[in-house]
Image (cartoon, rainbow over the protein chains, first blue to last red):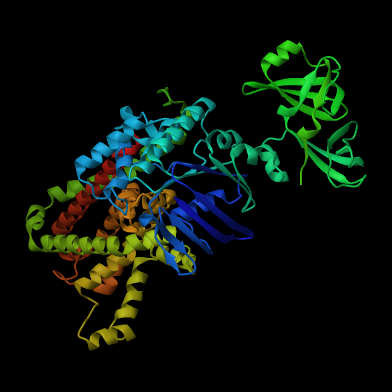
Length: 364
Length: 271
């Protein structure tokens, strides 16, 4: 278990964070670069001393500005993995993983040589890197380095695992494999894990709970989907890849019908009612996955928006296809390749854009 | 990729090969002359085993070894602080440390004499407690440190700066005290720069002349190091001077080869 709160100032930037992570739980700090996520991790590890706050790791208070108690990093039971992994270049993989077992404050400190060797072997096996034991960090790939760093962080049985952007600079396939690895680690070690990422897929795939962080503050907290699906903060919405963001003007507000009609500049979009006057400026977000395309004018739909449009381009993104269409305003729709094939559309094709009113949301 | 050997053009001969040959001859001919004259000189072999040469040799090695020890003990933490900490006056300290590199050693010697000589405040005070620094072996060591330490500190500082502070932080989150982190992570990674700097500083110390002469004098057996002994011997006994010079040449060559060997060994992590 780890929990705490900190307030910190870095130049003009102020940080005001609180968190809690239970054993066997992956808590994700999700937000843009510079939101203060890494600083929070570094404060838990003891590498940054916050202006004020209280930090608890494994049931021990390691920082308390009120009493002035500060535990130095080497006596906190923290497994910290920075973004660049910080493997020791002059030590082999085995030497790196064994390093925390040869000194310090962890329960396994000062183990006999044979016990160190068997703990290292155990981790080499668990993370499938046994054949790398004698290599030096720069002789192995980035994905392998990541596993070594993870093994090293786990070796002394820390009370919490702190991972800073653990999957950045890894290709998609490797990310998937390592995500599974991390879940296995969580289930095996029953550790609280705090993970920092600005990647939506990582946050969705790994988190048991998400803290959305923006400009040094937690702006939303909860289950991954609940937090990530409906961003209400403009900066975060860009992050969670809301592909369609419109600067619009309210045309009509109809409270009885529960809708607002908004002018996107060339097209009219119906969105759920919000207390706004006609003429008010409003920013509207629609995720590409919530935009449907039809090749014929659909009938009998509940969807409030059916707009004639023309396909501008089709481009692959991962396993999906992003279709750019023009209905007076530019829309991006996300389709499976199979849907593209079924519709038989190509750039220039005439289509209808279908968007549920409830898929449109006002950004702040 | 290495360029394949090609027959050099006339222009390349004039621009590159000729100056190279000239410069090699410029250095090599005098050294060869020193060797030939020395080995053929009357009394060379006698002088080599004589007490004058042995005394100077012993003094040079003892004082430069002490100087090297002091440089390591004081210079290493200093270099580390300069590399890692931002403190007020850091740039001033940085410049002060490098000043002796550009300062003529004889000026340094004179300055030390002014600071620690019997007529100075510090010197007078030391005199009061019965400690005379000038013209002693301690003065020799001080003069050597004055001129040589900057070479070690500068190299060590660059070595420490090249070690990622993130690795030291990592070591600490992995349970190492700051001391352990220094000895197990920082030192092994900066090792080559430290040894390289020390070799250079030691070579500078053993060849020290100007500051030593000024501050420590030239007393055979007490403050007369090899370079000073050469100067003295030159007045009476060319054979002895040549013997001393040949020994110094051998020592310098040895230092150079050792430094090169050390540098070419490469660290294991680079493999």
